[in-house]
Length: 227
Length: 178
Image (cartoon, rainbow over all chains, first blue to last red; front, side, top):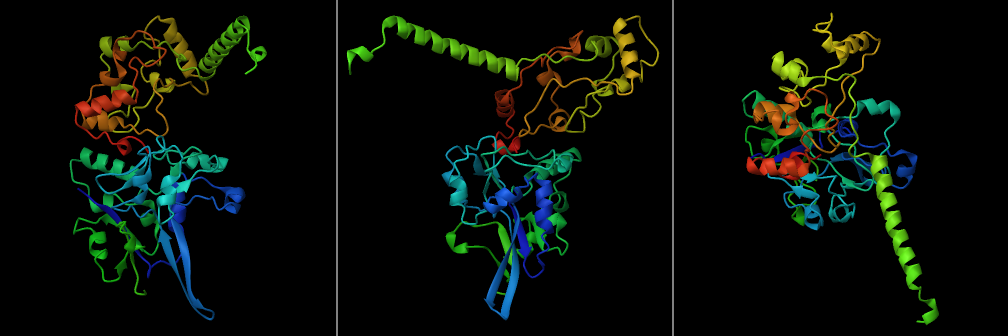
């Protein structure tokens, strides 16, 4: 059984935000527009957050790309009253939009603030509509959405592997953000398979996870030489 | 409470009747607007039995992609002209087909099954990998002599879940929903 996870090398990330763009187009994320932006209600499953440390002129900044952490002990699934969000056998925390009643308990329970509520009717500019990904649904207004580790790609990759009667290989399934990263900072794979790069990188001395003290056991690891 | 404020029995009956009437009207309006049993009208009265049973054609002749794609594929009338370039019978439907197929934009056959946007279904997975026969979901479509106005088998979520449970395949939400 796979345990899907991600390693993000902060020493390699240059903050270009290609992962954000790739995620938006892969997952049909609505364009919020000026209104949503002014209300701080835009949706971005993958967010490159800039952290600035120190006092001018002695400042250093770094970029922290932040998708859903796909915690092994997710707080969000515990509070969902309708089981619209759950962790599956392979460790992916899912969100079933058709089941979600929009109570936003999960968004409030998430310590990483990576669950987003559709406050407005999703707006896709007419010119981008033909480019919507048919493998991902367009979410209606009033439901929570979040990063799925591109699980629709896993569905397709697994089907393809079965057609070709071979096991699923490392290169068969990766996320859109990892695919698009020009510096190769984002690596995706099976944390439990020692042949996968993520398994090795997650045991790197530079590796840490966000808010480890909470005991949520995130499956997104970060690598950094700095504290 | 003051006795004068109570409604008389006739008025109460009238109010009750009005409520029922409005509920019925609302329900009917919904049925008409959303048209749940709306008939699908095909451009040609296609005879499945003649093509499948009598002519011995395989499903993939027209539904070209069912074995190795998510969608099975619905033929447009241009595909029909592969065989029906010249009239093969004296059928008036065939004459209509040839006439329609030679227009600038030949109409296509219309879908009977409409899957919601948030549900995932793959023909390849069910037909090629799981080995389900077409009849499981499509019923006796191969026996029909005229296009049915709707699906012969009503496939709802319970149909899928029952079949998945019987065959011991995943029934978790994310297996089909996204």
